[in-house]
Image 1 (cartoon, one colour):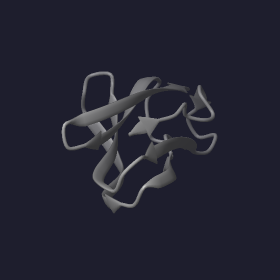
Image 2: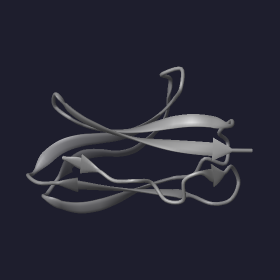
Image 3: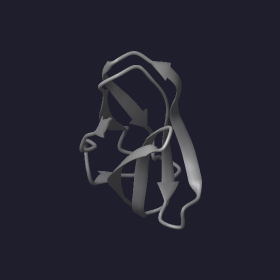
Image 4: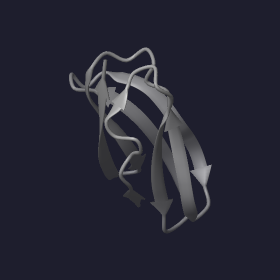
Length: 88
């Protein structure tokens, strides 16, 4: 279970989408979510059962306020987190 660096980062809101790569070493039921700095979930990018492999989640922050956001990959009790900086 690994989450990579998002690209582009930082991103200006309204300038497209952020790509967030992640890798699963074994088949797993996962969720990929975005939370703001207050801990509120603002988006679910992926959810379900996935085979081992590399994937990319995509988030469009066009409605997001400026600030730091956290992309969390969760599988059971395991978590991996990447930060995304959104600028206005």
